[in-house]
Image (spheres, rainbow, N blue to C red):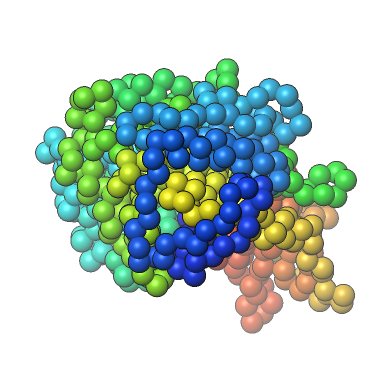
Length: 538
């Protein structure tokens, strides 16, 4: 799921600006080597010799641990592959904040939206078999598929489902799994979503849409997505520790504890371990084809080698070179900055860089963050897995820093340069919005009670219990406790989710003063500008 690709795109843009400017900021924590002016963005940098690469990795190893400690990331694992071999793999820190059990190369992490590439790989295998085509219409394979516009429904192709150009809002529908809906129900809900742009005209990140190609593959193979990933990818690649289920993640012997950014009892903000029985931990599993895989640094190294190896595993061609190229090739423009171009491909992002195009994707669940970055020109890849979410995107910085180190850009220290902004976000987390000094009174609470409905998110049942309004939202449901804020607006907390979520809910009233609609922040989508609206009695 999540997937904070925007933060990494901004990071790459800043990096490219630095490269073009010949940045020579000092990096004492990284290296004592004198800073050199790098090549400009128009010049292809030189590849390192074997001896230089060994030195680069040694320096990067120390740098990564220093950055982990500075950023407050409890644990992480890194693997680097080159020319079909794992040349570095290591665990750092601990599985739980304040603990002593170390992260190892075989420690299991949630890899979030880097799972999307596994789904596209299954699609590619079916394309190679001839059961489907990249440009086939979705309704020809999944007749129940619907968008709000009949023409869009008719024209939507399999490629469109994985190219982030549906016209739906950024991260639309991600909260459906939090609210307890299954994959079939999430796909069905897309017909009620109103687009924010015309079809194929604009990049907008989606999770729910990736359930569609997974469903098509399931119909072709007669197997669940989880079983197909294991049978057709994990097994031939030797990814023995990887899993597609929450049960598999929880039962692993060598596994991280999920963390998020939260407020400690002493008022500071940092890593907070999530309870193992946290009710919405199943978020990633429910949206599995978009973000439900758990894996390790060792296993993800094998995945990176496979991606760089033109679809081969142990000399067996699992995916044709043509389909591998199709998955990695630009489909939807994400931004055109200077000479640096970014495109969403098929579960991957294609990015032009001075050292040649890179193919990458990051991912974030509710308690983990992952980054996979491939440099095809160099047959080089790096994987960084971290056991913390909520803005902890250090894995992205580290992957980019290794790219810079590899090509000899010795004057840029991304992890140090971006640390103040990260600490600023943490400090901002300490600041709570102040309620109005003289709030307008609410209506009698009984007037708000009743059932409100959304075609997308289902029912929201408002009740009064002991003088407090509560909202049971969704199919699961998630329960919100409302505290009056101002007029018909209430601030909510969610006991099941804990202290990590809060938001606002507003009742709209008609001319007679009767509440007729409820509009509420969501748990994930509100960060991307989406709210849920429920009509009373609808």
